[in-house]
Length: 233
Image (tube, rainbow, N blue to C red):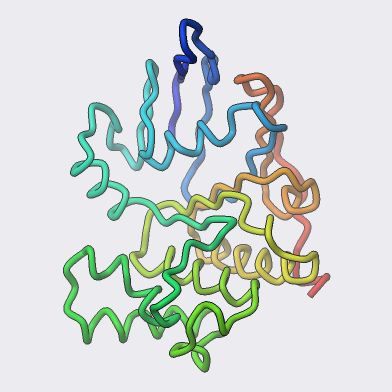
């Protein structure tokens, strides 16, 4: 599903250059639930940006579902993102003046799906995350956990190949974090491929594999016995 070969990325900082990714290699098969861990400056955000086609590597290869991801202009990158990827962010990134239902439907609007069809499909995904009754509420009327559930429904509604979650529990308390991870695990149980960037050890162990980044290289890549979040919910 995802294959990265010898990925390098540097950023110019005045007259100097900061080498952030220093030859990253890994594969993620379809249906995996992978945590990417690392301290600040380890390169995990840069890696996620490249995986999400928000940035491009200086060298190396990135293949997603058999498609080489390279030399993308913004139009093509946006098309590929819409086709392949769903994003979940720590800060939810919901539009405050749109209802939960309208927020979930947004990716389908960009796919030019007719309004009636996209609202019906969005309601289905809101129901999946347990928020059907809250569909017409605005984000400021929702709790942090509910906002993240809306964000998960929005990420899922386009039926992407891969979900990319960036610190999805970072703004939540422990109980709500485990509820969100319970939902993520159930989505993964259905065969969805999910990559979770996190600095929280307990959240990482709710995945099936942990990639440890340090100073731009993979320090360790281990399969772990998955802790089911449901036991804490």
